[in-house]
Image 1: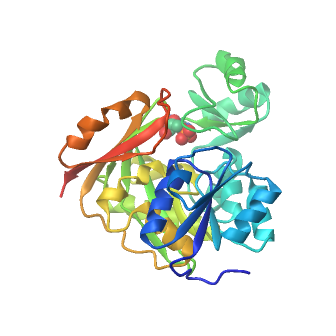
Image 2: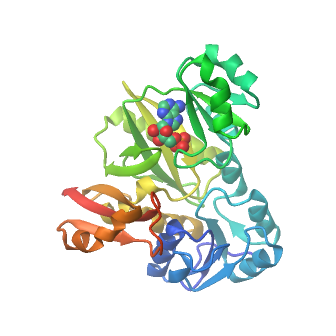
Length: 360
Ligand code: AMP
């Protein structure tokens, strides 16, 4: 039977995906008296270890989706490569899914994403759709050099990307992304990278956290400082963009929007993530209501809650072996350690993060 919102405590949230984002969503749900059921293809996932139940199956397994639809009052997802057809199948079974399939569809394909953003009046770099090396050569005069080639689908953390520095590098770049359907992007001459974590409720109410400043290394997020030092104009522009994107998708839940700060108040959207976001982890120790609780509140139809920052926080990802410093970090003043319960510290794997309070 279709759920009525707000979902009362004791209701069940289904989550597609079992990674650290699902884990932190489950912990937030637990604080509000809500149960979580995870659907993930992986045994022993970080999220399943703190959830009421787990269904281990492929995301598009019909029997697994039927079980999840029976168990959950509403379903959400914690990563953007869940097949859209899985979400559509759940909806056909009568269970509400938030955010909806449109947000997933848009976020899964960099050409669709940029086309959507520009139509929503959210500026991006100039780009070209690429299906062959000839498409790259044809677009270079318009985009200029250097330009960045990215696969349209399933690239993340800087994977599936190749810079083109001169016209002789076209073939090699296309080969480097596996000759896959791609997008060619003009280089953004940004001063720094910012992001805004935004949310929209079932009633259309929007909420925004203050912007964060993010440092990436090798395409992977290293640190986030928030609230970032930004002018009121930059904050207004980021919120304008977020409001436009959320509204056009009739979005319910938290979204991460990565921005390039061009200076002089100019912002470009790099990408949107239809889920809680690594650059929002600082909110766990910096705000009244953190992004995980905000997302749960939004999908459950609750009031969104207070996004006011209480302190400035620097979040540092613990990648691979860095998590082995847990004992030292645990002894630091003004630091809070968040570990994901992952077994093997493979190089570059996100094992946890630490939030350090910078100023009160
Ligand atoms: P992405 O996987 O699209 O988030 O890109 C990973 C990182 O590469 C970004 O955080 C930027 O540091 C850099 N990057 C991505 N696109 C561009 C661009 N068009 N111009 C300059 N740098 C970029």
